[in-house]
Structure formats: C-alpha cells, structure tokens
Image 1 (cartoon, each protein chain N blue to C red):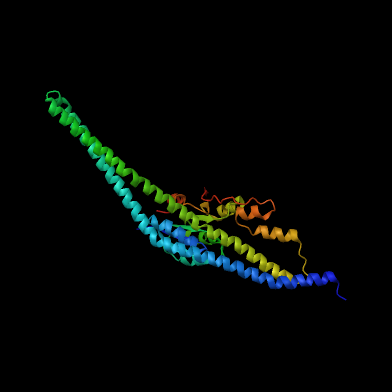
Image 2 (tube, rainbow over the protein chains, first blue to last red; image 1 turned 120 degrees about the vertical axis):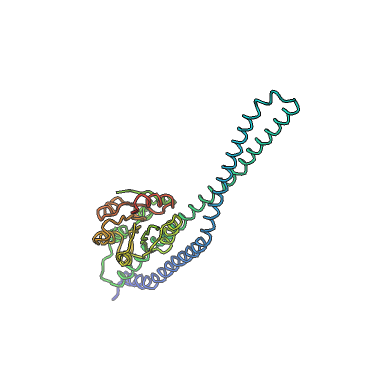
Length: 209
Length: 122
C-alpha cells in the first residue's frame, strides 16, 4: 500500500519535472531577449559613436579656435590701449571720445567671443559624460545574463536531483553549493533573506599588482 | 603603428563595449570568446596587452593567464583582468597566476584607458 506522504512526494516530483523545464526555458528566453536588445542598441551606438566623436572633436576645435581668437583680440585691445593712451591727452575732446568708443566696441567683441565659446565647451563636456554613461549601461546586460545563468544551472541541477528518488537533498548543502557559484556581490547579498536590494554595482576600481 | 590589444570575454556585448572604448583611443583590437580561443591567437603575432574576463566556459581567465605566461613569446604580456568578481581571494588568484591588474565591471572608458596606458607594452 502506498503511504499518502509518498503519493504527495511523487506528485511533487512529477510536477517539478514538468514545471522546471518550462521555468528554465522562460528564463533562458528572457536572457536571450535582453542580449538581443543590448546587441541592437550597441549596433546603433556603433553607428552613431564615430559621429558623436567627430562632433565632440569639432566642438573642441571650435572652442580652441574661439579661445585663440579671443586671445588675439585681447592682445589687440591691450596694444591699442598702450598706443592710444599716451596720445589721447593731446587729442581734441571729439577725437578722445571716438577713441574711447572704438575701444569699448573692441572690448564688447572680446565679451561676445567668450559667450560664443562657453556653450560649445559645455556641450562637449555633456556629450562625453552621456557617452560614458551609455558605455557603463551596456555592461549591465552581462551582469543580468550571469545571474540568470546561475539560476538556470541550479534549476537543471534540481531537475536531475529530483529524477533520482533516492538522492538526499539537504537544503544547507544545496544553498552552500549554489552560493559558491556566485561571482558578484549582489548575488551574495541577495542569497540570504536579509538581502539588501537596490545597491548599485560600483565597479571600475583597479588594483595593480 | 597602433598597439594591439587582445580582449577575451564570453559576452559579445561586453567585448564590443571594450573594443569601442579602445578603438576610440586608437588601439587595434583582437577578440576571443574564451581562454582557449584566445590562446589560439597567441601564435607569434605581436600583442601589446590582453584584457581578460575571469568566468568563461572552456578555459577561464585564470587558466588563460597561466597558459599564456607559459608561452615563451608571451611571458611578459601584460594582462588586465576585467571581471564582475571583486573578492580578494579571486584577486590573489589572478595575481599569483601572473595578471598585472584587476578591474571590476562595470568600468568607465576613462579608467579602462588609464589602466591600459599604464600596462600596454610600447
């Protein structure tokens, strides 16, 4: 006679044998789709990347050219000041006023050049910061993929274990083995029930040996 | 002539991101999907540096470093480990194998290029 507990255990094994492969396929499909999405975005980024680089370079060149022009006009203003100041004392009031007016116009020209250069500098910096963020963003797919692969492998492992009815399944050992396969701090944090969600991967730290 | 860097990672998107950062700075890039494929590229050609992931199928990054260091032509090849692994024990393993530096992903292009400029052979 079959004991009710044995019936329940067998039903659970049968259910798992059917359900686990479905979960695995769904997870694998999610991972594949996220890879396709990132590959698509990367392909687009590869296309626009050189244009962004060129725009940043041109913007930088324009800023430099404007700064050179700015320097040139500043020097011209100083030279004019040096030449005209001594002779202004001997000029008629009308001539003096005209010189002061011309000098004010040259100074205004310097200010205008400074105002033109500022936005270019700002744009270049902004584009470069956003490109940096995109580079970092693309790398998260790799992390998601690695986390999903660990789960998929564990599900396959469970499926195999359930197919062997006499195998003992001690949870502590199982979890310890699972934990040993983790490669990221987030995985280790989430492993315990006191996991702290939402912590960003900082990365980028370099240790030289 | 541009310096050549070998990038080894089983994630094609990661390889692409690294390659784009390096190519943008004027380096030439060779790519391999795991340690074994990378070893096949160490066929006598001039490679100035390698950037290698740790967890990969067939041959992992630590095994690759050991195998590369055993090749006379590539004994002095500088290798930067670029990985999601940040555990000290793993870093020590990489150091013992012969890696020159360890960088944790996600990386910023600027910090990658700084490390590359420090390690890359002339």
